[in-house]
Image 1 (cartoon, rainbow, N blue to C red):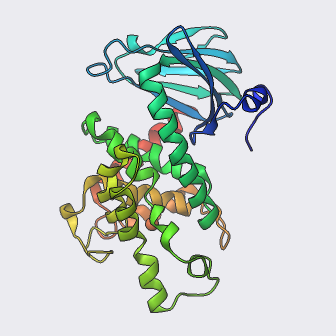
Image 2 (cartoon, rainbow, N blue to C red):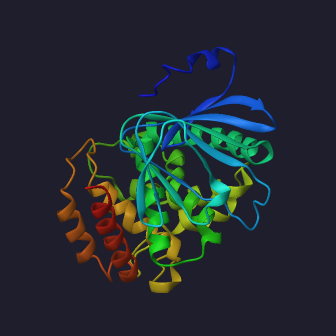
Length: 310
Ligand SMILES: [Fe+2]
């Protein structure tokens, strides 16, 4: 799955390599006071970039297209990213979207103090994401899609950007508690007994504990999202049977996008539903299973996505 063609030699020198969900990344090294990393985007994938201009003062972050065909979208305007062209993210106030029309490689130069801690933390996180993938038949793209959809719904609802990081990690690791569920329960082919079902449901509480005590501190604030992602708007969910606005908006978003993604993805035991059927299910659950405002926002996100790329 990973494309090592052009940078396998860096591995031999012992440089770390990982994939961040949306891209494979390797750290090439530091020079001129900057960290240099190579991102490999796969065809059809997106990379969102936004600096926090208030706190990231003096931070350098540039993106140079090395290979492939990529489009840039900024404030609704799309254009092609020229080979060799460099984009300085500090010149852009809003989110820049890179969309790969073919496999592509982008060189990213970033201030060392900003890049390295994030890079190594991400490596720890990626190992955990891989572990979840192995357990539950998910692909890392599932976690990544949940994260991306959640961020888009949050933005659609005009919620503050300052909370995005909390949402991002909560969405990405919503099912981390499944690491605590015994494999024979997780992979049981037949229906679960009620005792087994109780253990399964506890992945919310166990996951919240894992995140609350996580060695990567930026994750800790996301624990409430993991804890509440199976609550239902009508109060019949788990683990606490929270109702309506007692469920955080973040968890309400993860609940909607996770259900949608589960329905529209092939799983071992069933085929994916067509998008329009999955949408119908969301509409059916609007106000019972799901927060109605979140369903509406997600439907408009889906509509915008369709207009953007099809
Ligand atoms: Fe879950």
